[in-house]
Length: 258
Image (cartoon, rainbow, N blue to C red):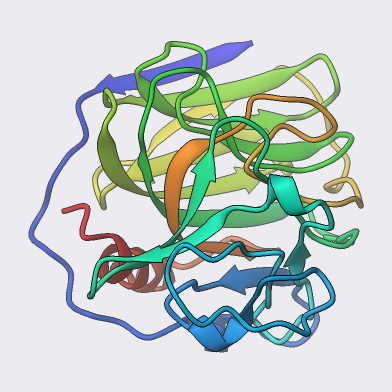
């Protein structure tokens, strides 16, 4: 396993407000885009029949606004995160006990993918923000194994991975953008618009595994997230530098991390 890490989260100048990057979801590219500030996309039940209308209500479904239809749901009432807002920012609050959401099975059909998220981790007990299924797959943890980091994993197989870590102790907000590239088995992740770190796995060559994406826990396991999630983007391709800047700006406008 190859691991790379940095000390501290960089803080360049604050990015300007940016709208949801729906135009990045071109034909033939799958993914998802979740924005809790669009309250019309939130429902208290998994079927999407009871709208969320106020802070502290449970979220059993958040609709994907990418146009790809990968809505995330939670059928168990006690395991639903809460919608919260402070008058300007909006987020899903995951309790670190059992809250999580799950997408339908996603056929990435790609060797490459990008994940972006804006969040605030509340604790430094290892927890999962997002995790795919099978292998190769992609994972972001907050924190990861060090207990004081943001971490991205590229699982090139069920036993081989590459990991990058940005050290930042809780409570702390962050905008993370991670590239996962099985064509060279490399994972790269930036934190708060700073320099991206990278690491390379020792083996593997397949496209990303088709399967559900878990939000707020490790797939089929625990590592429940104790954090606010202000936004989450997944795209089945790598982004250009300009597109990465666009996603970073969008997520920072939601998060206010830097």
